[in-house]
Structures are given as C-alpha cells and as structure tokens.
Amino acid sequence: GAGVSQSPSNKVTEKGKDVELRCDPISGHTALYWYRQRLGQGLEFLIYFQGNSAPDKSGLPSDRFSAERTGESVSTLTIQRTQQEDSAVYLCASSLIFADGYTFGSGTRLTVV
Amino acid sequence: AQSVTQLGSHVSVSEGALVLLRCNYSSSVPPYLFWYVQYPNQGLQLLLKYTTGATLVKGINGFEAEFKKSETSFHLTKPSAHMSDAAEYFCAVSPLYGNNRLAFGKGNQVVVIP
Image (tube, rainbow over all chains, first blue to last red; front, side, top):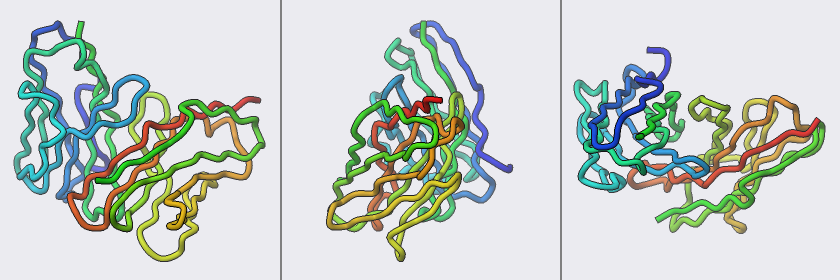
C-alpha cells in the first residue's frame, strides 16, 4: 500500500481482556517496528522484525506482550490480560533501507478501563 | 547503547520568531540522526536526516539541522515559525552498524503564539 496502515485506530477494552493490534507495512519493506507512546512520554521500543524473524524482542515489557509477522507483510501485536498501564498509542513503522528512516502508521490508541 | 536528550518538554515561540529545538546524543559510534514531527492524532513524519556527507541538512517545511560531532548535537532550527509548526518534534539516533533500532528523545511540544 501507499503507507503504513494500522487497525483499529482506537480500541477501548476492559482490564483483563486480550487485544490484537494490526499493522500493514508498505509493500516490500523488509523491516517492521513496534513502538509504544504513553501520554507525555517519548517512544518506547517494543520489537523489531526483519522479514518474519524478530531479532530484537528486548523491548517487550512483559510476557503478556507478543508479536508475529507473516509473509514478510502483516504484523500483529497481541496483549494478553490487559492492564491499565497498557493504555497508550501503539505505533508501527516500516523501512526498506534503514538510512532512509522509518515510515510510521497513524497508530492505535488503546484505552484499558 | 545510544540515547537522546531533548530538553524542555514544551517550547513556546512567537509566530515569525526563530524555532530552535536542541538534541544531544550519546553513541559509541558515529550515528544516523533523524528529526520527526507528529501532528495531533497522527503518526510521526520524517522531517530530515543525517547519515553521511554534509553536516547541514535541510528538510521539509523550511526546517534544517546541523550535525556537530564535537558537541554530539543535532539541533533543529527554522528561521520563522508559522502557526502550522505547532506539533511535537522528536529527535532520534541509531548507530551506523547494529540493530537498526532508533532511540527517540522524549520530544518537544511546540506551541506557536500568534
């Protein structure tokens, strides 16, 4: 596609429920990144995919968080048993050549009530 | 490991005045450097980048930044602020070799005063 697409754009969920966040990167971009942005804070790295492999999962905050990528395309970030501190904007980005920088999606705003 | 420091979470500037946003980084190797802008309810958009070559780089919307290795800085400037420049600005850094992961600063929320 023309840009990075994320869905849903907004998600309100009850504490303890599982959520899935989706990212469609730019076609052909081999690298895909997930970041979290809490209110008033910078971007927190979560995970990085090169192709379908995740060489760097170091940013996932707990074992409730997982992510996968298939077909070197779509990625899904799953948060199990959501907690209120998971409320944030989750941003996905993709790149082909790292020196060109990332292209970001518009994010998914997750609110846990 | 690399890190980025952006001082002053909120920056107020009068319309027509100079915009100056400071970014300092720590990196064990020469880095790639980026500035991104985020408008309300949108993702981040690349403003400009430094990889190699000329240390003064020009970006979109009249912004520019200068890489100063001796000062480990990459400050962002615009000579004359417009109302449309009101947004959040993030500096980011990554080493030339490594995990390709960008480390972001905490951001500067720019408010333009008419």
